[in-house]
Image (cartoon, rainbow, N blue to C red; front, side, top):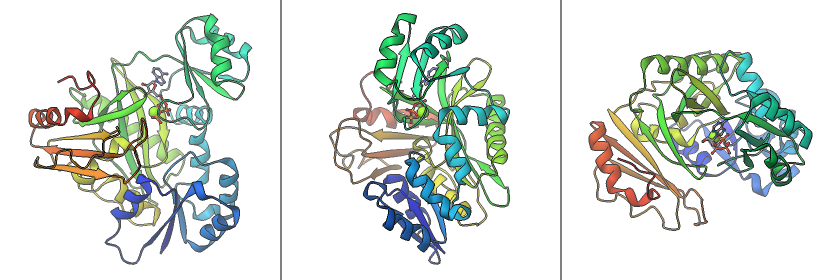
Length: 356
Ligand code: ATP
Ligand code: MG
């Protein structure tokens, strides 16, 4: 089978690598930045099935994908739903999943309506194309409305009530064509300036009740869309609940630990699912795991070279401010051992963001 993946960044590359042992599957990556209509159509026609590494696919490309709709996995319906924060939240709610209260904003006047409805503070976001916290504005006072509209407005926005969360966690699952669903153990995710810096498994003190809520959420959203492939839910943990923030219809940075840390990685199960195969065990192989992003002008190659059970992934990208250049995964026999290894790699994490 020939599988085409739209996007040739690190996610596409890790997807390709994860299935390299299956010689009957040929993986082709399409560079979306080098798009032209003819080469894309050729790519869509030449491959037996199509998947994608990102939901940030421009509308004109999505409409071209419609010509081969039946061979796109996850489905175009899922892709379109999760491309827009409003249709995304509506789908989550329809599937019985809690989200922040929200209000669609198409004008300055709508911002004032949102303040009436949601109170303050409010997080304003562009409905499409946001990533790493880009395209967002925190409204603290009604008088911030004009600045918010000037900075990110003049396009469709969503206003979200601020969720007073304890911390951020994510749950990643995979659904096969036969409806089988497998869910990876959850991680706690620590962000800095809108970018994921590191993920920890297990999430300290995370209750079995909350784990069950997260697994139910994944099952409900994946089943409701007849979803095929790996799917990620970013969640806010509150005192007694989990509130869905957003969905990624793809593998996710917070699941990179699963390459070395789990029996089957998020990448491999995605590839198995989108090629119509059965998916396999998602359990963790270790008592404790950490994934640290390498985001700096220094390459990741030196990091942790002489530490045992430390795996360095370099994406081979040129350094640019705030760009993810690679990641390091640490496996350990317990959380204390994990945390002492993280402390040795502290240089990868901004000052004050690693608190152990
Ligand atoms: P990424 O692609 O990196 O996940 P994004 O640009 O898609 O980011 P979000 O995940 O929606 O943006 O938001 C970025 C961060 O802003 C969240 O991880 C969270 O820390 C904060 N945030 C977003 N929405 C809310 C909310 N409603 N209440 C409180 N905090 C929020
Ligand atoms: Mg997010």
